[in-house]
Image 1 (cartoon, helix red, strand yellow):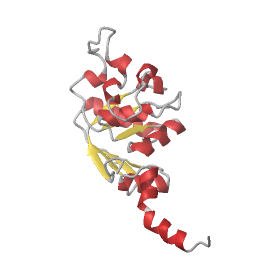
Image 2: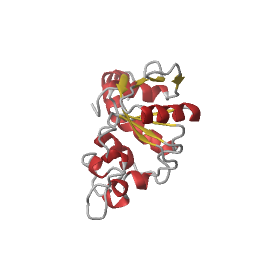
Image 3: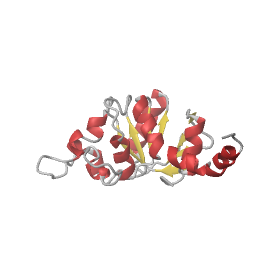
Length: 198
């Protein structure tokens, strides 16, 4: 199994109300030397989290103990820039299982789906409501239901639906990456192969 199964997540959230967050800001290029998915969370938003002497920047949200949770709420156009899959790896390795935004760059969105981070696209109005709710109460809960394809905010009557490719949805529910999916079909593939003429 490539990652934990994702069915329904209820969690507090970390707000990052910045638009056009690109993949170099998520994980700077100098940290892309490793080929395994481990350790990238240490350098998530590295240049925003730390000063040049490696001391934490007190005003950055990931260094603020007020905000915790498995959901990252980002501004519009999250994950733009280069196609590096390490950006999704860093988000997952840090502990986030879901990113909510009003718009995602396509390649980043697909990279997230391939490794177990659910990108949830909501309306700009609902995104603004989420940011406002977190600012008022950092302990507010957000529920993301993959089966129903809905996201809801505690204390709000608003429930929004989100789109997801059906293949990626099933993989997320089973904790499969593309290779796991094929391996899971091993018996079917073997049966099909026996029915083919040589």
